[in-house]
Amino acid sequence: MKITERTLTEAWQRTAARHPLLHGVGLPYLAASEEASDEWTDRTEETEEGGLCLVLDEDGTVRGRHGPYRELFVTRDLEQVLYLIAEAAVRRRGGTPEEVAGTLDRIDPAWGRRFRGGGLDDPGSIERCGRDPLEGLAWIAGTWREQSPYTHLAFFRAGPGRTVDPERLALSYGADPAQVAAGTRLKDLLAEDDGRAHWDRQWQSCCFGQAGGWTYLLHHDSPPGSFADKEAYAALGIEESVWLSATSAKAIYTFDYVRDGRRVDDDWGILELIWYDRGRAPYLRGGELDFLNRAVRRAELDHPELTGEFQLYFHALEMSLGLRLPRGEFAEGEVRAAYWAE
Figure 1 (cartoon, rainbow, N blue to C red):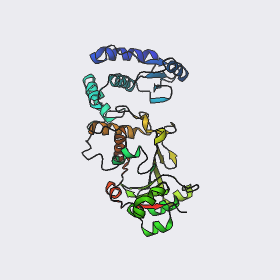
Figure 2 (tube, rainbow, N blue to C red):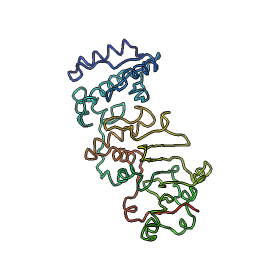
Figure 3 (spheres, helix red, strand yellow):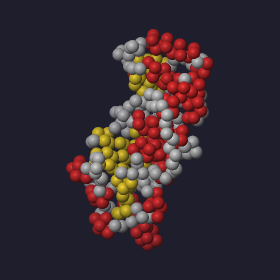
Figure 4 (tube, rainbow, N blue to C red):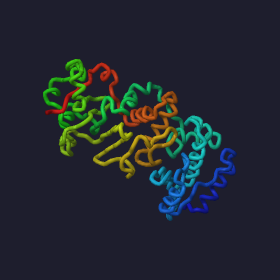
């Protein structure tokens, strides 16, 4: 059934009337175009947290928006729209993700399961994580916000049955061939003049290796022209890459995921980690990054002890994409390292 203003209004009125927890919750502002939505957000310059605006296209597609630039979901499924309106209303009242899930349970058990799953469908039973969230990747999240140990965390993966050679990768980005050949470790760089020399040169260094099926390359600055080109990527068999970049002075923390030569971002452009707020899906619901929305929700529910949103996000990257960094090797200085070639 095509969604119209009338069908949506009547359906929400029936839904809110059936559930006491939704009494008094009105239909969000409904715009007939994105231009009308922009006018509304301009008039309500500071929309309340969790505020939702709906844009209804002529073909019955409903677009949920928060503020003038954030599209939250796109769907032609009326039941999904009703759920998302209810979810936004419940989240707006505050509470932990588990408390929000509990409230949605009381409205409709299927809605509670859907919220816990993080997607738009009912996922059924979900297995809990059951592991230390600070061992795989999230251990680095706290210091990384201040660009420590490195500004850029890059991960590369080849197709099935292949691995990306970490030495060749480091060389293609400009690592010193002599240090790569010698098997230089981070502790070797730190040992120079008791670490004083490395302190002066740390911005010209990199660390590299393999973990979780990915080859990683961590670095600060790169000399001009050192970035690997498409031919080098092809020679290494790279089919996927994930980039996490921090610019702490400007509070910019970005995530880029490239697969088969194309950025996966639902045409959002640059994806900043500060868009993620606990309890709210950071990316388009039902979009290309919905798998990460689901992983973030699992991290929130499985690890309420984690107070840092970056830690939760990094753990979600580990659970969804398998990204890992060997904490022990970094702590003991055993990770491979090199300076950029002179």
